[in-house]
Amino acid sequence: MAKEPEKIGNVILETLSRMGFAERLQKQSAVMKWGEIVGDTIAAETEALRIDGNTLVVRVHQAAWRQQLIYLKEGLLEKLKTELGKDSIEDIRFI
Image (cartoon, rainbow, N blue to C red; front, side, top):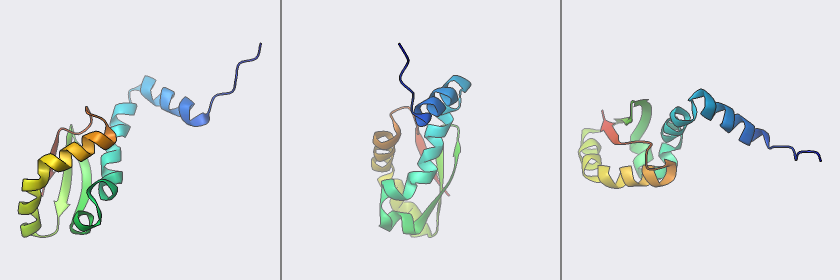
């Protein structure tokens, strides 16, 4: 009996996982999805730059916003973990 064809996306994800890239790709999606996750208001004042280990580095355009985001940090981390998985991003550094 012939085996059902697999979706190419599943094959790619499985290959990336075997090569050790899946976790890194998952973390990198925090940079790509930052605006979606935090909303338009915060996205307009910030720019997700990179991942350092388990930390998302975010540029903030104004010092007042940086201070506000420090207070919102725990909630933003929860949103990231909900969207990307519990083991993805452990901290956010605002610069």
